[in-house]
Length: 485
Image 1: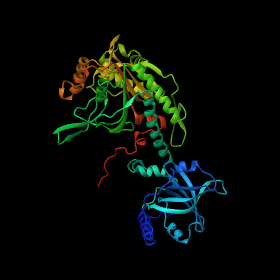
Image 2: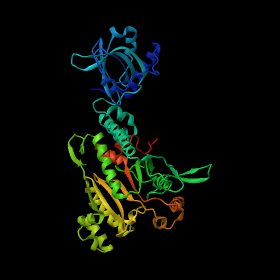
Image 3: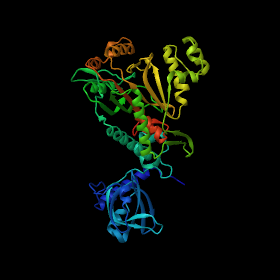
């Protein structure tokens, strides 16, 4: 079958736009009052009841004098029936210049077709927006990844699974807010431009504030400002925030991403682990309707199932390393590097010994863990903002929650000793004082209560709960390379 060139299709639609003008029809209308979305309108179906709804034409079945169309929005679709006897010859002339993709508003009455489908018999319609370009082909949708991510609006129009993922993301974020607020946490906002990029080890984006004559950084984490609020007396705070890290892209990394951070005065990492476990299970139960999360391939076959049922497993970092590589802790630093070569783990010559062990953890523990696992008591070098374990000073009181082969959430017993915190930050910065947030250290000297803190990567959480395999599938507009001129 010959496919009509896009340029010809555009010309046809331009011609219909001119025809609408000739018929004194405004092709880009204004306000059209409706009682709700398509889904909400369908929910109140009652035979012969009056109804108004607006949406995009996504299908058209021409039966001669009778026309059946699908009217759709983000929530769903409903069938409408158009006949010249109902709308009159003058409006039928306007109707004949409509295309799939056009937005219209209709009023009429509910009825059930002979095939049993709940539909709307149209009495009047209004053109709300003329689509000058054809939509993606109905049955195949947007398959090209470049188009899918760069022109997300087409993906949302054509691909039901994408709409479902983003609908779930919206609900996930809403339920997280509700969960925390119900437990007394206060939602706050902290600066996205900061004079010192702190709270994590990452490469920041840098900008310049002309009026103040100073360099600023897009935040890599909100942690140090949220802890200032603990100093100020707020007992439970959280922020759903945008963070920015000037680093590489992958199926798990985007330079701009969404993070939840929460702090609870007088708590510790154990309480925070319990909070996260309860929160994720609560949200999954509400949004997904199950704690058994299935991940499927493109053919719809289940390739793995993540079991979120409580209680979640907890294990110490050192024990997990020993189980993965028996005898690891008896090896010298040089022997560990040799063992990494034998295991096929690439380790740079310039990394520290604790980083070598972390590479082993990431490859042999983290990537192989599907069901939830709280990894506790990590080396203090990995987490400079956490409190040391009093019985074992080489580790800190933290957890790292791993699900589906990736870290979903870290949680700490927060360090609140200003002198120890200063030494840790100096060690992390390599002695470069300008990289240390001295204002944060000043705040600590006024006294921060002991506290537990958590971070949750919202994008990764959504990936896990929806079965998406790339972070680009759960971010409306992921960052892409510029299109070549």
